[in-house]
Image 1 (cartoon, rainbow, N blue to C red):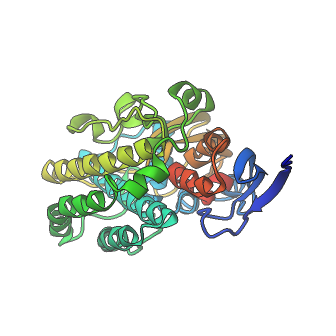
Image 2 (spheres, rainbow, N blue to C red):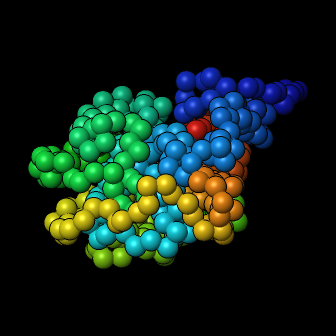
Length: 366
């Protein structure tokens, strides 16, 4: 009689398909996953503790390095947290431009996800195509901020500088070409038999389980849950613009793929409307040169590309920096879904499920 044993296998911490320095401890029956435990902490930099020794604006640079492929969203969430506690009103021009930049950041993040997720499963052409469009967005970031990956563009009360000359035309050029490029991605993947075989009914998680685990973003909406912070608690200019929430009911890797594709289309809609409706006027409110916030505590959340990004900040009213800062990184919380999503699947499916979660380890370890 054939006898099988449960074996333990380490995937990582430097496996090329783990999207960062992550160690997975697998228990296998043959090639079937019986149990899985993610082991994190290899990238820990102590961002939250470091912030206590920085001024409020110095700490802004630390937020870029959380989800480093969506630095714009990290900056926005942190700056809005300061503004919420400080009770300052931001000019409408700054709100519209912040919205535009954040959605370009969402497109950049989703393009990187699509490129790497497709490559992990074996679709190399999509990797090359998606990076081509992402370069276009990074060029726009460079025009505004001088940086391509780590932007640090927003400031307390608005923007660092006014919108640069030539930026609007650059965005409009991108708006013209991107729908056709999206059609190319879909032609290669959406009805591809191999892609569907690798993603349909793989990494299934029900709406109830997703909610209980605190999952958010495309992972949650891929399980049919209609929740997006931009709709639930509109911030910046989102409440003034016309766009739709991307939701799918498949609960699997394929559904989450469709959600992110639709999110890219909606981001393009938001970018175009923000550009068309950009108000004239000041780009920054009058703020003191040295920022001191009143004593108190505040929690603020936004919809980052990976999900709900939250900042909990305490001010003692004395210093020029945070007394305490805690970050709710969506990648950290979403990683909890990896175990229930992979149990019963094959080893090869682990890579597909990690890709569908779209985790960035800088945001997991902090």
